[in-house]
Image (cartoon, rainbow, N blue to C red; front, side, top):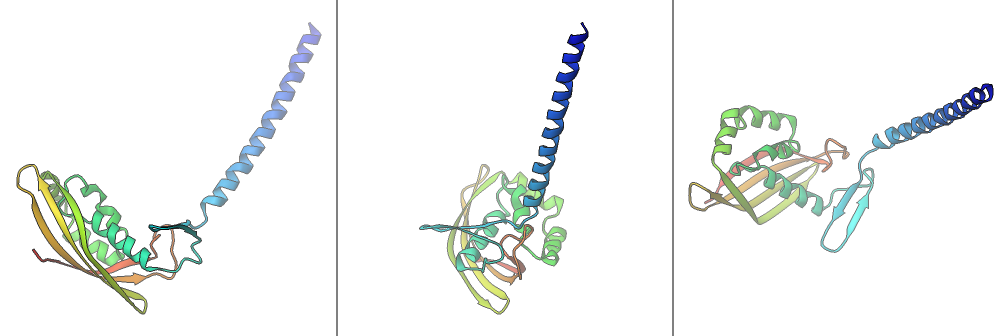
Length: 192
């Protein structure tokens, strides 16, 4: 009987030592993952013919970056789509804080958002023209697009919209600003 207790005690000591080693390994793994998570994100550029992975430090802006940012901005900044109204924040995130605050206070009031939701409309965006030119640390951009609005209550309606944007180029990309650019001025004109 005494041997049985001694064997059980030795087994518990071995298991305890093993678990201490596992805890030590898990702490090392946790510290390693925390160290990795604090690094800047990778930039992945995808075009029709190639995919590039670029580190943040060496990622200079290219025409593809500006084009993608403008397309994402227009697709997410949709005043007519009742089902995508919750994605407007994605376009607000690529605005300067002053412009973002202006839109939150004047345009995206709770009553306006409720009106958009009550439209019961879906949209399709067709880009007609995207042009931009860099002058110093800013990019002057013009986007002309057609927004096809289809509602359950009304006929299909097309709106041709022109956006004139001034985009500030940031010194460095970050997790908060993965495009490396922020829209600082916004002018919207409905052409038809």
